Image (cartoon, each protein chain N blue to C red):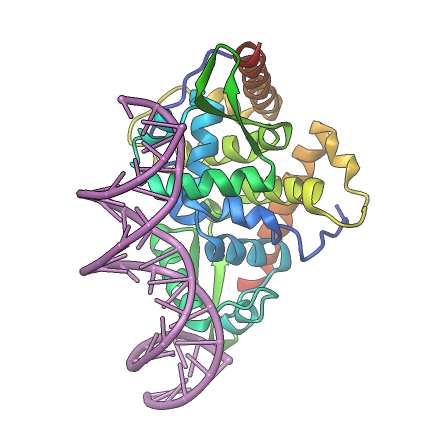
Length: 140
Length: 140
DNA sequence: CAGGATCCGTTTCGATACTG
DNA sequence: CAGTATCGAAACGGATCCTG
């Protein structure tokens, strides 16, 4: 394992996303809970202020991890969807979920199967596929 | 892939770490660049202010992802080392590095081998083992 | 009424100066 | 060297206010 990473790794726009609480929560809510409207996202458990939600959605769109559009059948409501670039954040999100579950859970749940690297990789791929299917159905 | 994650996933103390730019950079510097003194960490490319570095080290210690101690042979200098809980953040850090490298690199480097899930898992394990070996040698 | 934008008091940041 | 103190600037967050 001699490969070197650039010291600039993790520095550029990744930190704007990953180093920001609200951006992470928005991406999690979209990816895992299929939230897509401003209202959905505003009602997160953590209680984002609408001004912050607004600013983060603009940020995420400018970086290209989400897109803003309207439903085919409903021209009024804006919806936000993860792009492929955004869906590729799934491994990060899921690793955070796994770590969090391992170290800060108060009660046991059966997450242990993911200790097997095989099933973890598969689980992440499953989350990504599920989201892509959701996008397909949403914009169809 | 029917397993459900608690909505509290990713919310608790994980966000204090992952949702914070400096905490992430400190963990990265310790894990990948083997930084261990205040001075080492203060000289990061990104330029942490010393007051923030100080507050983050306290935070990370309080959460239990790092420990503060002194070298056996040098009683003057404080050193900071990742605990096992901290080393277990490696998958998150490495996924961020991989995503960052994929989407924000300006010039190509040969990271492509990690597109194979097998080698990615192995690479992460390698990073963790390397750090554990570093800890062993440091406190020996 | 959804989808934000604006205002404003409070908290946090970040750069530098300072201390044991 | 390893932090702490200070202070102006920026960001937060919560309430309210527009606008189609």
